[in-house]
Length: 543
Ligand code: FAD
Ligand code: NAP
Image 1 (cartoon, rainbow, N blue to C red):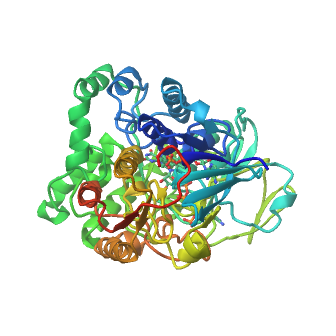
Image 2: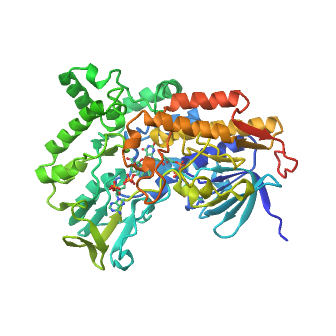
Image 3: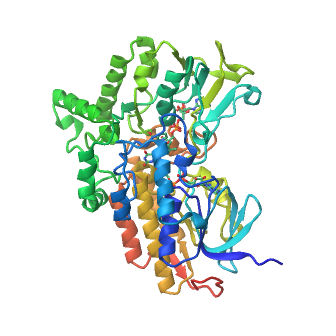
């Protein structure tokens, strides 16, 4: 019988998390096998090739900080990098650190089972290949499990259908076509202005309007780039030590109502002109106080009305059902202005829901729309989807599906009681999607790397979250969230976008500084809240 190959660590996913994890593990002298479902590295930026896809955290900050040479040599051409540039960057990192040789591409992991008697994880791929590893690190992404709603009749549509998160690699032209976009979250809001420029007619099918602020994207000013590169380590340190999100956002110092109305307006205006997520950092209490939040929301509502010429369309585009920022704020280029174009029609699905997809388009209660293409910008089964798509089985046959049937539970968002030696990078219960994700990825990768180094040094072979520590952390995550406006919105942060998904606020809202402090304290105390043990059986080079 063929012997099953065994490595120290298996990493699932080769986005920014998987790439850096692989590099870090190699530096520790460990043997690693990474698996990636896509044909190449890049994760989100490999899959999301839709028109307009770009980051909304500034490129100078949405990039790795772990290697000074890397951050000095790479040149971003725009304030917010576009998807092709982000993908090229991921490719550059893979080449620079020679990472591809340990990644098996086009390989989806189907299951991961902890073999208790051997203290090994058994990984099985969709093709049936089996691998054993002492440690399993899930770098599977918070927004990698695309969600396409099941609309009646979808399979009979004769035109082309796309999901933003699974865009073809070859160029897609909508020239002269009738196109329908379903969904007006960040992805739809980025794609709509560009599709509108190409298509003969664009129909935007909107169920819920979102708040969007202009990116104010621009070609990278040389002096701006130089100012960052001159001082990169210090600026990164400042983001680490003095920001809530892992980005320097020039946070305001006042509560909204500490400032007279006229000054307040000026401040919002300045932030609007500055562009991007900076808007939400104008004051200290925007996500804490409903009255303060309303001031910011009203400012954006007025902006929408001032940009969109048709008052009825402006009304439909104006969000009224949630606090600004409580759902992920969208960042756009020309989104609202796009609705002034004669070839763009907004269809309000609240008053006129989709009944079915037909052979030639979409039919709502009131009307039939003939379409050549449908773009589903319908989002993700966020934070838990990619993990629960696999069968992950821990101690005593416990599946992650069962463990998380009432919502995700995890210690520090990194480990789950009952699942020894299994780590989740940017897992639920960590700042993850409420932060600059590359920043949070680096923090997790380094913490996990240090943890494995510690185990090796101390000749320990398993680490497992204790149930009591996990319970306490989950309670803390909920308590902190409940002090904010976040859980009140029906967002993907709470699982509300997926029918039947338990409603739990998943990310940790306490800020990256407090979070890092907690993680560091846990490590300094010899990994308090974790059980560390020496197993009798160990087959790999680390033992
Ligand atoms: P991903 O990039 O999602 O990579 C995970 C990889 O795991 C994927 O390639 C996937 O194929 C693979 N995988 C999953 N399951 C399996 C399996 N079972 N077997 C094998 N492989 C598997 N964050 C920000 O901070 N700023 C931004 O501006 C920003 N913009 C975004 C724009 C879009 C369109 C999206 C969708 C997300 C954005 N994000 C942004 C969030 C984004 O998720 C992170 O910034 C970051 O790219 C995540 O990296 P990752 O490696 O953790 O996950
Ligand atoms: P999303 O925010 O979840 O938006 C999905 C959209 O699809 C919503 O408008 C939703 O409407 C709609 N929708 C879903 N199912 C529908 C149905 N059955 N019928 C009609 N409409 C339906 O997803 P996303 O836009 O892909 O963004 C997800 C996250 O990825 C973002 O929040 C952000 O974190 C990240 N992202 C970032 C950027 C960036 O700017 N850098 C770009 C893209 C994505 P309802 O609200 O009514 O459910």
